[in-house]
Image (cartoon, rainbow over all chains, first blue to last red; front, side):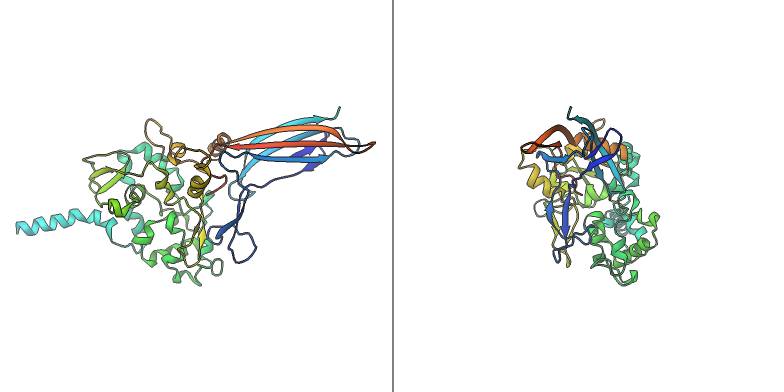
Amino acid sequence: MTAKTVDGETIEMQSRHYHPQATNEMNSKMLYGAQVKVANIRDTSIQPYRTKEESFEFVLPEGVRTAEITVNLSYDVVNPDMRYNLHRITREVSLD
Amino acid sequence: MKYWILGLAMVVMALPGMALAGKKATTIDELAEMFDSSRCKTCHSQIYKQWEQSHHARPMMGVAGGLKDTPLAVKGATPFSPDTPEEATIETFPCFKCHLPQALTHAEDSVAVEYAKALLDKDREKIGKLQITCKVCHNYKAIVHRLSVGEPQPDTLYSTGEVARHPDSEFTSVKKSAVMERPLFCGQCHGLGPNLEFDNPVQCANLYGSYLHAYVPAGGTQTCQDCHMEPIDGKADHLIAPNFNDKEDTIARYQQALALDVQTLGYEWLLKSGHHVPKVVVNTKIDSSAGHRIPDG
């Protein structure tokens, strides 16, 4: 989620990551790669038939009363360098 | 003499079937030849063309040709990695369990040595010869209940229907598989969770586990095949999408599976008397109609 002023200045940027997170169960370091990871210790992935809800909130800087909101849902195929953008929704929020 | 000729003829006829029954390959080329299914395209051209674009046709290549097994061939990179590629064995590559299951029973350690060298050399042409071919699914992995049904027969393919006289020199009949249309069939490789049978456990895909323990309890009734092998012209699509290298199609599939809703609110929050704070709230909802967690493997 990115919020910008009408002039394009970034006000706020927040992200959520949805994926299983695994270690080798011998220490606390998350590992990537089937050859080394052993078991999930946390799973924030999107589950079937279960709504994933988030609430992002932030305070507008002084003098700013309108924000352009963009929410991107993307899929990182291997890593963030190979990103497939799935949905992009924009909203304008004004206090006036 | 007649009997001798007949006996010889029977041995020659039996050899192709025996190729899957016991012989072990000593090279990548031999293993690829043993499971080569290219002649299937003579009659099943559309299915073969779909499979050629699938990840099953390049199971060792990784997404975008990343050669995912490379760490296994690099000294010290994983618990399995040998000091030198010459020391590699079939056990060096636990990924063979699903990415090249035929190697477990039909390849000598020399194939692992050649594979380790190919990974270090980034020899994509050689590695690309290692495939999950028609024979792997329609014969080698076709029977799950082996105690009940027996081992796959060397002259028989298994599919969703029967063909009494299959016009092929090696596989002369097609029998109906009890599980080929069921998630269990895919679950053989597409994962329950940690693979604890190895000396060092590994975890790859959890898709089947997610299907069983999240999708089914949530009331889902579709099979893997319903969504990933949706028929085209009456035949199951053997692309078995997604093909992650096909960006456009992959995005379309995920867009279909994941719905995003965004609600926004701007207001002046009253923190304390006389002190309003200009605040924005963005609420998002993602709904998934997939049959498993996203992402998984």
